[in-house]
Length: 187
Image 1 (cartoon, rainbow, N blue to C red):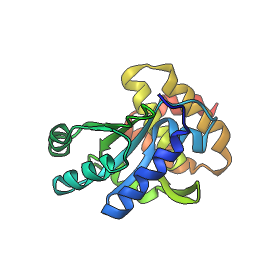
Image 2: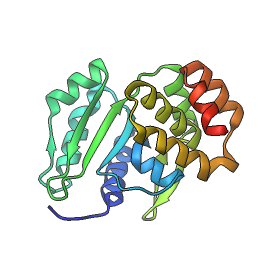
Image 3: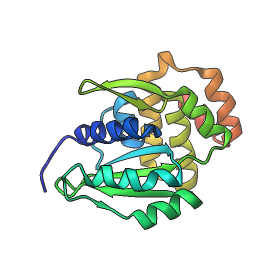
Image 4: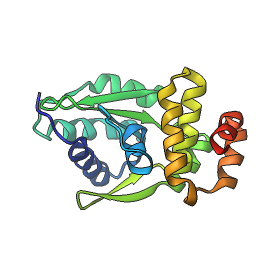
């Protein structure tokens, strides 16, 4: 498989979202790269607000990237209806894009309102805010106990700390049940 910068695929996918008018925000390792300490990530995680009617066009656009990619439209349709995640795997690079369906709960609604555009390769790409990335990583840590999530949250907190909205973090930390881990980050 070809070694490549995953940001190229991210830009291609973001262009598709823009063309199809699908709201998205980049999260996971790519967002940690944007807000914290750069680290290797083998995939691209995006939260999407997608309707069942958009799945066919999304699948076609992803396959039209001309990279012999894998996309299971049946699985994507089921996930869009029921929640969860589906993916696209680029056939040339092996890079996987995970599409997480927005649950439209209050936290997801807030994340979409607060998403932040950053320029990648001359294109405007929407990322989760650093506060929402910290909160998401602490949520994942609470559920999985994977130190990777805690390390990512610490990295974003240390590097973006001077610009963080601490009131927002504390409010949502309580609502999401991650206030104790958030306190540890702050100390």
